[in-house]
Length: 66
Image 1: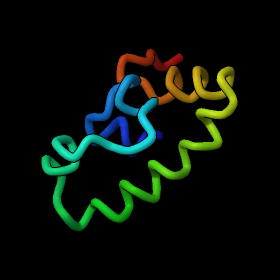
Image 2 (image 1 turned 30 degrees about the horizontal axis):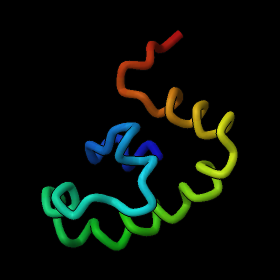
Image 3 (image 1 turned 90 degrees about the vertical axis):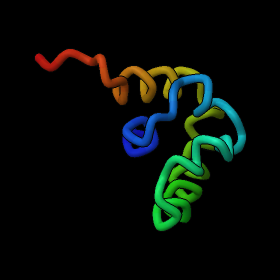
Image 4 (image 1 turned 120 degrees about the horizontal axis):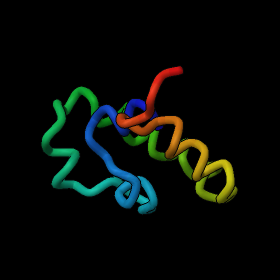
C-alpha cells in the first residue's frame, strides 16, 4: 500500500478493484507489473475493513512521526 500511495494513488482509488489507466500512464511502464502485483495484494486488506482503515492511515503521507 505504501508504494501505491507513493505512486500517487489516494484512498478512493485504492478502494477500486483495478487501478485507473490514466494513473498508470503517469508511471514508467517498467513499474506497471509491480503496481498490478501490489494492487492484487490489496484484496485481502479490502476484505477486512478495520485492517483496510489501518493500512490507509499508516500509509498516509500526512502521517506524523512520533
